[in-house]
Amino acid sequence: MEFVEQFFSYIIALGAAVMMPIIFTILGVCIGIKFSKALKSGLYVGVGFVGLGVITGLLTSSLGPVLNKVVEIYGLELNVFDMGWPAAASVAYNTSVGAFIIPVCLGVNLVLLLIGCTRTVNIDLWNYWHFAFIGAVVYFLTDSIAWGFFAAIICYIITLVLADLTAKKFQTFYQGMEGISIPQPFCQGFTPFAILIGKALDMIPGFDKLNIDAEGMKKKFGLFGEPLFLGVIIGIAIGCLACKDWQEFVDSIPAILGLGVKMGAVMELIPRITSLFIEGLKPISEATRELIAKKFGANKEFYIGMSPALVIGHPTTLIVSLLLIPVTLVLAVALPGNQFLPLASLAGMFYVFVMVLPYTKGNVVKSFIVGLIVMAIGLYFVTLMADNFTSAAAAVSAAHPDDAAVRVPEGFKAGSLDFASSPIAFLIYACMKYIFTWIGAAILTAIAVALLVWNRIRINK
Image (cartoon, rainbow, N blue to C red):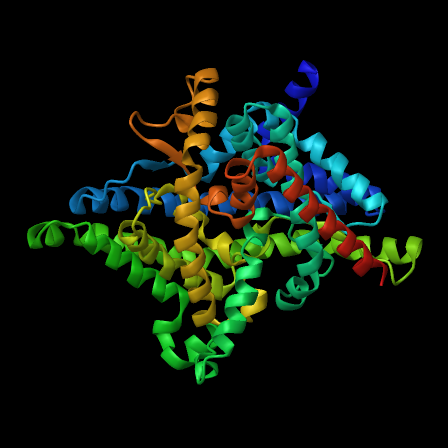
């Protein structure tokens, strides 16, 4: 068991940029692609992850000090510390649940494929940390490793079914994504909100006149509708907020303009980098469809479960995410009872909209309203889950005292927008905490079984 734990810890430590090229190369060779072509596809995906890491790192390093200064100037003190998703992932993988999450979830995926309850083959191994996260939180809530794995498996099952249900809509909206689904629970948790809020907004008389997508914004507002220009403007606005007085503003003009250009660079470069994912995916996706058609017939279909990073470069996602960053900060301070101030997590805002856009059809106004509502609710989810997440972070920090990233400052609790603000994570957490454990587990089991049966019937039809 110790060897198995060390083996998977080693794989996790490779990171997505190394792990995904290896997986894609092996997968490509297995489905009949030449080794050189499979390797090239894998490397394109790996380079995409490297580029995305550099850009999100630029966003975090540029915004972080400025936002911290804003917090200091306006006295915005809340007691749930934002660890950011990389630290949350590190905590999740370094718990007892996280050490074995990959083989456990791959086993569940295989069983569900064999009994015909899912079409998704989830190879997005790095993002398995989401399942480890809720497993770790429930583990420290119940003091039971068994309940921790139960929570992780329930989360995995719900996510696979949602990935199947949304696959066609996802593939239709995003070009070049044929044969791909998104089995990432943070993204999938917002799908029901997108559907329900979208239908509610459609019932408002005259709302259809606000049907503006990213291209429509460019036509209507010209330069002001460009993601690049919006990035510059919002970056400058945030930079101005970090100035105490007029003299500091004058002295900080070069830094403020520099922040604006950096935010514009993030908005412009993310779509260019995510195009590498599509280029790497195309040969794998085409070969998979051909193989399935040959072996199982044209009516049989499977999906490759991939990271939502593939599509976060969509113009509407960029525009709405950037607009929502300052709004979320205001919400965090204004909402009564909230104790979480998102700072390090804000780079993950792009991932909120991956599965929202297919249902809002890229409508900027609709997507923004959905994002506003789910963020307001999500802040409370993070606050309510903070105690048990703090316990997990403290245990990992004690085991790895040299790792400053997983250390929670004294007097604070731990929080992260991704994955603690997800409705799926909170549903599982609430059932296990606020209802008697066995009753909560029974409710979650009933939900998971019902979804699997429904999905199997749907697949057979």
